Length: 228
Length: 264
Image (cartoon, rainbow over all chains, first blue to last red):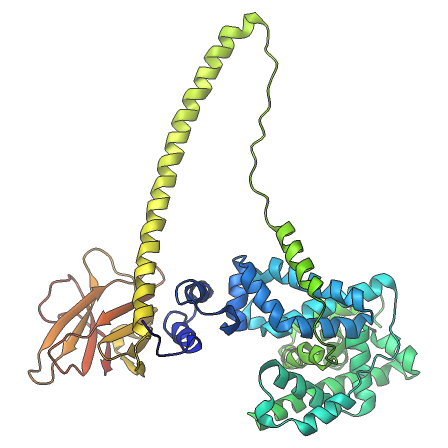
């Protein structure tokens, strides 16, 4: 028999029919998709993949890795600044996903944000263990500016779109606020350490971080609304 | 920084200053404790923290793209995953040296008693397991039938969603309904589970005769949920479907309260 709707559409239909509220039903839905409907893992959404990973499905973990390893590796390398160590952190991040997938709660946020959090914590822990502070913790946003100018809105899909949104929002921040956020996020520096590093009063750093994060939130909301 | 070792209550202004560092995971331990205490009791600051959380989570996306990691990373990750898999249960057998001849009969009786207990215990355990397996198998068979029916349903060209109107008797429930040319698929949650002979029943209204033709009966699971695929009765232009709750499954016409109605 020939299918007249795409696997993704079938999956969406299954989501709507079977999968209305319960997590158990969502897991069952993902299993149905790959085992009975023969839907390719790469077509499953993040939550379905996490549901399968929670059932110790290695193919689902592999698909999740293929989708996000580049992002995870980029973040790890940005934080620790050393390629081999970043690779180790990236591998560990996905092993942690394997172990903790069953505790992932959708209300805590999207899978990509969860994965970023796992990676960052692991990388910052490594920095602290090694007692290393990478030099120049500000992200090079030149690439972000050119990308934001050259890409059409239609090209900004999925993770790539989110990536450009975040970069565009960061570019829009006043440089001192951006620096404070980046030193904390990518360098793991406390507010006092940022004050020492930049030679600014602690109160100034606190204000910069607060205003910076508020503006980042507002800018992300605005860009998200503009780009639909 | 807040003085260590003190039970400090912080005000909203201080909390707002600490929230960004808290969300970024770079707050000192004593400040974390004070902020957590404050957030537990202050809805305004908690809302501020929640609204900033998403922005913080996404900051990692600003890291410059450095391309794919080496292929060995995936191999290492999968190897580590294999290592974390739970080891299979192993049975350790140990042999004991033979005791003196004077203990032989005692050992024989003890062994017989243990063997008897084992047989009885094992028999009971096997029966319990068999019972559980039968229940699981029945559940699996039921789910498989539904899944196969859904699969066939979704191979249709035209699947449309149809609005469902919940009646007063079904106000605790929610339902979704999809229609193809000859079948409907319905998902329901929140319906009260029924006991004994009571069933939910589907009725098809024939606009020509005005009669209600009985359709499938069903029950919901312990959570009040269920998914079904039903054929639309042939030979009529059925445009209206009603679900009622009936005290028994063989009523020729609806007698119980209406749960929901659907205009196809």
